[in-house]
Structures are given as C-alpha cells and as structure tokens.
Image (cartoon, rainbow, N blue to C red; front, side, top):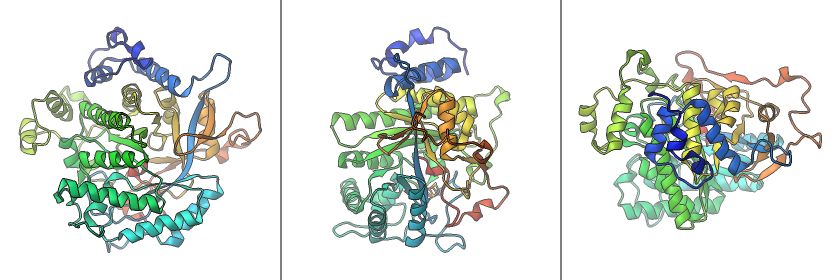
Length: 490
Ligand code: SF4
C-alpha cells in the first residue's frame, strides 16, 4: 500500500463518478486501490449503489431494498477435462467418485428447491468430454417440462468452449477436448452460435459467469490449465448477449495475480458490456460477483504464502504492472518468466479488507453493470453484510442444503430468514428477486409474511460453517453432496 491520499476524491472527480457522469480509467482504479481509505471507498461505492438501487432511507422515509435469490447450485457432473490448479472438485472419467447425475437425482433436487420457494437452478458441471448434445438438450427439456416455472441459469463459458470442441453437430467439425482453439475462428464462432441456439431452444435461459477467474493471460495460464482462454470466455458471453441472454461476470482473486490484473479483469467486462450496449444486443451482463480464492485441497493452495512483512514487492504485482504498462507481453510466457521469475510461485490471499476494497472498486469502476453481488458464501455472513456498505446490492443465493461440500475451503450456509435478517439488520428491506433482478417478494414486514420476522428462536437459524477437513477431503465429493463448489457462484 502506498500513502493514503486525503485529496484523492477531488483528484479523481469522485462526485462526478458517483453521479454517473465520469468514468474511472484503469489508472484511476489503481489509485483507488492504493491511495483510498477503506471507509471512504465504502462511502463512495455505497453512493453509486444507492443511485442505482435506491438509498437506505429515501426522502419520504421509506427504506431501500437489497436483494437475494433462492436457487440451487446443481453440479450435474464432476468429470472434467481441465485441471485448474485451484480446483478440488474435478475427477477423471472412471474415477471411483466421479459422477453424472441421473434425471431422477436432478429432478429430486429441483423438486426440493421448488418446495422452498426457489425460482432458479444454477446448473454447472465439470467439462465432461463424453456427453453428447442430446444429453444436454434432454436435460434442459426434461427440467422445463417438469418445472416450467424454474429459470435455468446454466453452463458457464468454459463448458461452452468444450461443447464447441467435442459435441457432434451436423455441418461442424469436432476436435479433441481442450483444443477448440484449433478450430478456425469462423467455424468456432458459427458452431458456438449453433450449439447455444440449440440449448436455448431446449430451455436454457441465461448463462452464469463461472470460470472467469482472472483474465490476464500470464495468470490464467498458470491457474486454469486447459480451461477457456479469456477471449473465449468473453466471446461466449458476447454471443449470449447477441442471442438475447442475460449473463453474470465473476472474478476469483487473492492468489497469484497483481492488483493491476484485477483492474484489467474488470475493464474487460466493462468493454464487452459497452459492446453489447453499442450494438443494442438484447442480452447484457446483469451482475458482477468477485470472491477470494479458497485454497485448501487445491494445487494452487500448496504454494507458499507471500510474506507481507518482508518489505519486498509481491511478484504478482511486479509482473502485472509490467504488463499493464505495455513493457511486457503477458502472452509471452518465456519473457514473463525471465522478467519476474518469482511470479506465480507464492500466493497472496485476500482478507476481509482486501475483499471489501476490491468489491468497492468494482462498483465504482463497472458503471455499466447493474448489480454487484456480495460473496458471503466465502467471506462469511458478517462480512457479506458489511459488503452492503461497500457497493453490493445483492446477497446472492440462499444455500438450501446442509450437506454442501466446500471442496476447497470454508464456505457458509444460510437460511432465507437469516439472509433477510442480515439485510434488515443492515438497515434495508430484504426482497427476493429473480434472475433478472425483478422483485418477487418485498419483505417490508407489514404483511406479517417476512421470513425473518417470523423467527422466534434464532438458534435454529444460525449460519452453518461448512468445511471439509483434512487431506483427501476433496475425494468425498459425490453426487449426493456436491451441490456447490468454489466455481459455482454467479
Ligand atoms: S474449476 Fe471447473 S473447469 Fe476447472 S478443473 Fe474444476 S471443474 Fe474443471
């Protein structure tokens, strides 16, 4: 951190930023990260959030709304052709505890969701190389037939990239898993469009932002082995926007990346959103959610910690700054390794203040994205609540299962009453939303139907800390328990 700058707000024209009249540059965002007081950042990000979503208390005395959704994260398979270094979930086909959900298992999970008032499934897999297009179409059609009211938010961009590689579709070539980049660009794009249209026809409603991680190539090639490149990820989402689907964007930070890589990540989302707006495409990024890397049981997590007391610069920052300044090509692995040999060899994890700082900057920087989601799932409910004062307007999803497996570290499980309680305790009115951020139920309290106001014994509603202890714990992931994993937000 450099010195805090009491004049930063004036120097960056922050009042105009808050009013939506000035856009922050990448350099501005870097200054915010390094020079702004945390509380001031929160105040500025809250002011933007209030402009978009309404203030805590309006002039007429009414209270503003902050939202949550009731959905269920269903990982239909854990078989995956990629080897992301932060992942403790994936399995090879044929491993003892690899699985692909049956139709009955899938429908049972959605039935339970509907019974508690859920409106959406978040459907993501590993990147299974052996499933056919018909499998996905049947899966979607079956769900829509059985549960027509449920919104299907499914298949993150890396899955689409793999679909382009391996799915057989008349008139298009296939290639080996993880090699879709070898298809000619025009063919890749045409096949992506054809596959996406088929899945939309079968019932796909929107696309989650899983697999975004960090876009910068010098980071991505170390952490997302075999997964979609940044351009592929962004191209899938642009295609979705062109075809009329809403999507979310995500960022997983607090590992080997530099701060400039985080800003670059946000900038690429903002640029693609500009593209959708300029072209008047019917789809958009509707939300951005960032969360810190969970290290346990992952290859990436076995790297040593950055020693913050050493006085030395974090190598990830040094590399990111060189790439951001244009003096180094992040795509040139050899040059990057030679210039900053220590980069990618230590992890700098994010704590609460770094998380809040990053989220607040996202709210200020992403002036064309409607919603910023708080990541209480990884940060815990109290930090998730405080995140409402650092630019977040949404607490994401109620986690409905008690047997959630967090294969890569600690996550939390909250009930709907507790989620509402967190929002109300923060001074806002809790409201259940749908995938498009339409308000479904506003729990003002006057109708006596607010989930939190009906609770008489909070000891039954406390958060559950979900954590799989010990070496080998990731091997416990199974069809029965693996309903959520670190890639699953969004
Ligand atoms: S994060 Fe996703 S794509 Fe990467 S290895 Fe795990 S399941 Fe596969």
